[in-house]
Length: 182
Image (cartoon, rainbow, N blue to C red; front, side, top):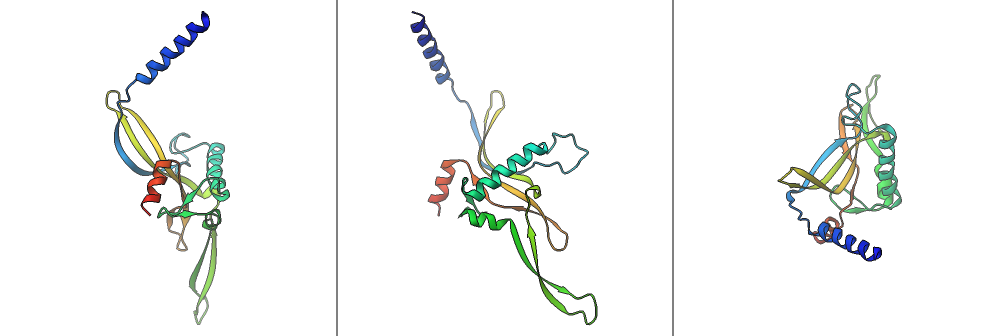
């Protein structure tokens, strides 16, 4: 008898849970934005625009190692699939720069400069999300469709720039749409 009671109770709970209406309205199907994962200012509280070091390192390592190994399918910024060798190549950038000698006759010469992107250079993540909201209580839901690690770089002139390295899409429907649109 207890067995029948437990089955009835579980069935009742499942029925009630299944009947709950989802009143969420889609706010946007796509929104993209950057999130700092390392604080730009050491004076900020530790939790403002920051993940604690070990958690940040683990997250960045999971993303990079997964893309380099092929565990996570990576895409370039134009949504073309890239393989693990192309992902690996992103982390080393060779630039040919024309320079002028410091002594007369001040000849111009070309030199190769190799910049390596290190895990500690990745201090932002770029998210692509879908947002929905329940207007009754302002409960928001965010569905992450993709993320891109973003590295802080300085060019030859010392100018700061932010370089998205690659995308990893986590939403299968979005990936299917990418394939259809190719």
